[in-house]
Image 1 (cartoon, rainbow, N blue to C red):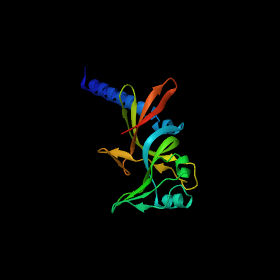
Image 2 (cartoon, helix red, strand yellow):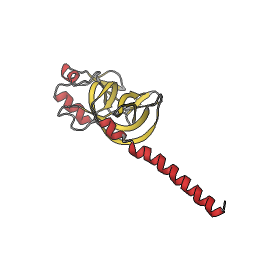
Image 3 (cartoon, rainbow, N blue to C red):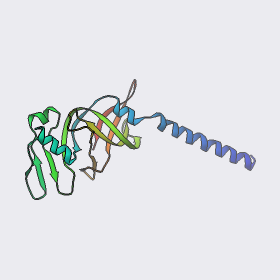
Image 4 (cartoon, rainbow, N blue to C red):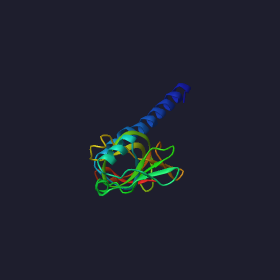
Length: 177
């Protein structure tokens, strides 16, 4: 085979491989899949702004904060807060944003997908910055889900979502820690 033919063949193979790998990523719209239907979350941590905390106190979703230690302050949830699927008290720690745990069914808003990779047993693992939509005037913006880094929830770490195949495409399975 002539050198020019070998180079042409190599270029064609490289182009075909690039197109094949691009096609699978562009055809897989993780954002749309995660936002398509409400998902069940079980004990995920979400961050709050100071404005969210203040509004929650005013609207009686949680009590005024009490200091537990030099580093930790807690606002106890009220029944009104639990009715919105907040499942643990609001925690405020030194050098961290306030956060609260949620448990229930929520719609998600995905701001940015940072990675899609193969998971276990034909699943896909999606790493994304995403938030839960809480239907209350105190939370006009989705509350960011805290991802896990080195075994701890971190407010600046994207969450990891496992998706599984269905007969109609892909669906949310769970948040992976």
